Image 1 (tube, rainbow, N blue to C red):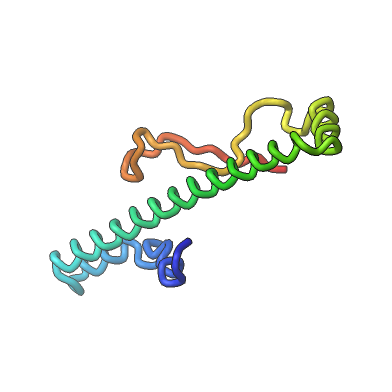
Image 2 (cartoon, helix red, strand yellow):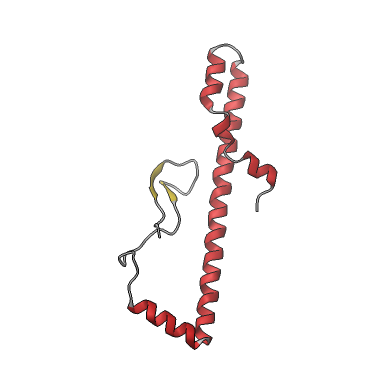
Length: 126
């Protein structure tokens, strides 16, 4: 997982927004080169944070799949678990039976953090 230093950096764009850099440039407190360098740094950190969050989400999904597989393996050898699964299948859950998102996600036009966001999915509430 991430280091404490990395965790502290997550969301740095929220603390040094591009608008502040632009305002500093407009007020002549910094040069054009400094403004461009700061904006590039903010964008790079933001993209790095997005990529880190995406990889963390992928790792969480992988771990969830591993737990689901382990659960299925345990159910195969436990008669009590088999009865519980059968009972749950007979009584439908609260979700209404349709597909649901188990985690919130941003939907992009292309598989890149830089591509245009075209939608989002909200996680189902329990």
